[in-house]
Image (cartoon, rainbow, N blue to C red):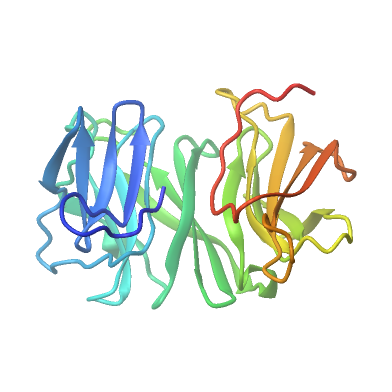
Length: 274
């Protein structure tokens, strides 16, 4: 979630909650949240990192809350913080910046996911303009060093004009695809590279560009539907936002509701009655 600052009190730029705990970005630093309590900075960085209001990735799988990647605006590079297996969740004791050998100056973090290729791997997607990179961090299989990540691979890096104004990067578990929206289209590419494919194009009905989208709710990632919201600022109607529902592999909408809502900036869907 992304929050606009409010006068006084709790003023996060971003909040990531997994069950009853997670992390938040406040004042350019990352803090842990657990049972309603907000911690101090998660890492005492000798370089005094500054994540600004940018996004960041914290793994939520096997080594939950022990691996964090963000872009450091002060030091102008991607930063990697980590802890050994067995450490408290969302507390970090070391940097692994040395794993990243290429220059990724200006690359904001778009998202990340834990998947299994060699053993435990975290994939992180970053971009600067249309320069997009897919990173893979391989975790050690040895308990001697606490299963810390020990390798960084640039899976793919290239110019992707479709990503210039991307909306809603999300990973489809099991299928191995990243999805994103741009204009009135939804695209995807695989975890093995930037093989961009068009998934669907909205009907030519003048409802504006996509402002938000999501899969339906599925704890196991077995998604059945895609929900898409658009907004047409030039509409003369009171409500300028529209909503479309598609089957996960469909190209024709199952349901269309035009000009029924204000501008949708984020959405989540429960179980759908289709």
